[in-house]
Length: 278
Image (cartoon, rainbow, N blue to C red; front, side, top):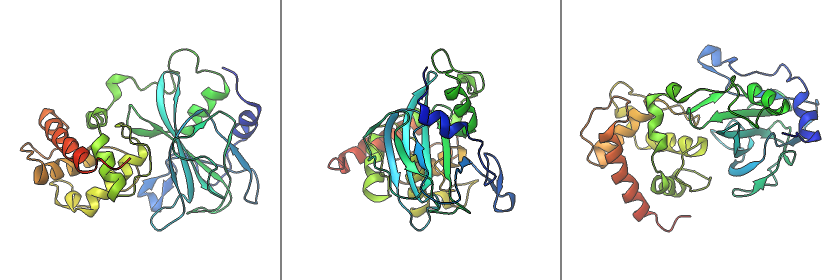
């Protein structure tokens, strides 16, 4: 796999000391889920796309959004699907949702928008199948080494057995739910029935706004709106399905057949109610 010259130059630079993946945040309450790249003390350094793919979401600075100008692409590399996000841009990306991006295209520019201590580009990588954020530098290393032509690289291979039970819900069809999230809860991505970071974050906002997360047993609090999926998201979902879609099973964070059947009813109902949303 050949790597574009601009991509190689940008990502071969050692990330600066702003924050790396897994670094403690908020006194250790949470961890940094990306890696910061910074090439200048001034905003504006062009950011080339690490990999080619399709733009699935864009966001701009605003209350409750600490990533400033952000653009997310869905890419396929080494036999797996990834959501790659570029944040803190100095300006909005020239690419819009639905656009195709090639590796090396200038997708953003290092900036200071959102919550950051200096000009940088915050890179995040979300493994769609595993339902979790992974260290971006592992993907960067494999891209720069041209390791995407064969099977999945060992450093990124989670394997089917490693996929948590909670993420089974991400394999279900979400088209109708995405339409509802787009109409009411700030989802700006593509309605494709496949939930990724943008869909999950909007769903988390929905669960909080409706009070389902706080009413869910063994949760009793709002979800963190971070686009990551786990058992708490399933618990909130099950509470919603119990109250609105005749789910009679346990609120246990495990998406079994009963949860799937009730979600299917919710999916159909929302698809009909929000059919005009595209």
